[in-house]
Length: 108
Length: 387
Image (cartoon, rainbow over all chains, first blue to last red; front, side, top):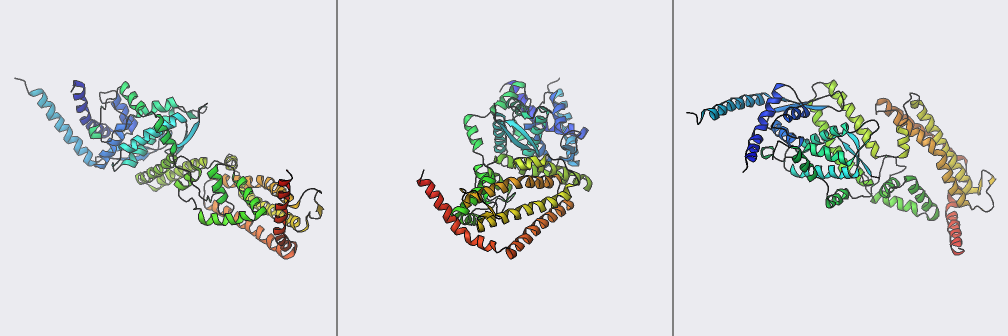
């Protein structure tokens, strides 16, 4: 397994977490999410994002509502549910702990 | 020159070059296959379609109405392959190269192309829309892709010449099923099933969307919009030169009044035609006006049919224009429609009644049909032999 493949496995696992974080900040639609991710290592595509979003919705983490857009048809705007916020909080906390562990371990 | 295919994505019509259509078709097929078993499959697919539609729109302008193959490929590459299980998604960081290879992975091979065009096999149905009687001729016309008027003429000819047209028609009314569902309607004219599939999903998305609206007003507005767009697209498939012309006629309030009037004219023309026909069949003259010496009665009747068709066509087209011009169906629309139908029926029925009661020629005309058919058959036989 190359280094890159290992990183890719990490990214995969973290994508959901990042999506939660983006949606927590404001109501967004898919193009906003893609745009925010595009500048990072987590750049992804609709083909990945839509199945992920619908899985998260199925798990009750987020919901969407239809909103008119200035040009073109209505769009789905996503927002977190209470459960989604709770999961984000837990994940952030967990992330903090992991981070701490990563830094701490191996230091004398 | 490239063939252009019209599709419906998310309730809007898009025109794609054939190669682009194939690529899109293959992409959606793959997506559908990969999402097999996913409880949200339909929703994800309609999300995907909406996203594709949005990207297509950026490639179109007021002077550019067709999405070319290259652009479709670019859009699909941008979309990226559908990841069946997000938990096991491959490389989310889609580098340029990764994205391109993902997109071209869906480029159609010869085989997929053939499969994609298999589409729905064409099936013979009766089509009620725009039908004269039971939609048999309409269905046949859609099946072989010609103008229904020609099929009707053929039937009328068969009826006049050997009387078989009526029999065949009756049998077909019983035997041939009517196209009821959108799928059947599509199959009747061989429209690509994918287009119908898009509609189905667009509708699914519609009901999803309806749930999402907080208040009734927003919901109603969305409903209206959706219907308008769906109608526009469905009509585009039902594309017919008459309705095409009619659809492009701007609405005028006078139309609701013009419609019954047009019906009146149409009814009158029909009656006039029937009377002339009766006169011709019964006396061999046009209201006493003798036919030219070498024109047989049956040929005159045939010419009469054609003349009637030509005369009535603008009336029919104008009525159609009024229907379309009235815009969205509403109570006013139904009212005008009802009034129109009533006027038309009343005129035809009343005049027919009068004709039967006051013109003994009518009975004679009916009686003369078999001998006339015989005469026509004889003439044709003679012509055939003398050839």
